[in-house]
Image (cartoon, rainbow, N blue to C red):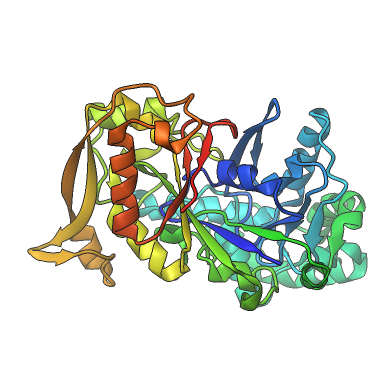
Length: 427
């Protein structure tokens, strides 16, 4: 049966939560495959508005099984907070599954994340300070703790003691921070385990058995291509693989089970945190301020104001290649209705050398100057339009150029935040 991967094509905040929400009701299972509480999805549907950081947004639909895969890192406290928020809104989470192999974010991970950012000063990465990088580092260093470890007090305490032998000296001697005892952490985390125990499973087996039974699975990406640890703007990236291949390793489902890879791209471009951004508009620029205010461009997780710029076709073309995209979903097209003219970056000028894909070497990318084409805006409200043919000619021309430059068909256009403000397009 068909399974789909959904990925971000830019620097995140493309509206993946909205697109996941639109698609979720068509699937039996929705899986998060990487990332942690640093990734926020805002979902607006059926009278509910939820900001979900750990739990897949498919949870909002009755009958859809939300799965947190092995490639994720889990902050149990955040999960419990989200479960409480779901309960308050009358949304069932009885079907929730959490991989026993998913690693756990510990208090010292958050301490180290924040301390490291502070030490970097003006060269900071711009992390969410949720402990993501240190947790993934421990996973690779083989001193991390996993969700299954919380189910056995003896194992949990032994592994935690081993981890603290390494972490406490760093906290104290490198950063001048308080240290931890095993009991400091265990008393809370073993309580979390009592609540979460029924949801912790062997997720790879569950997902593969579901496929054998003919179930449809949607793999929900978090972060985005340009934040991928290998393919993003390193070092200003996250600590996991956000590209489509990360859905395979982060779930334990083989690639032959995937038939569609959907890329989500915002109709303009934003970025939170540090790092290069060729089409970024300068602070105070009228167009940039319009995009920020009309698009409500403030981070779901951090609340930080996002950096705004014009659509960058070079980045999306690159994302199409490294993800193997088969479809594109364009979000927030309505925000551009406020502009008289709209620019699209079609190439970079790097000291006289022209690039139509992201340069491999970071020094060239830092030097990249956008090469623009300019198009007329449509200056009319499109938020109530339901059919693609009814969009203004200028809006359809804009989509046609995005499609041509990416080489990927645009099958969905979002003209507002609600799931009903979504135009599906047959290609």
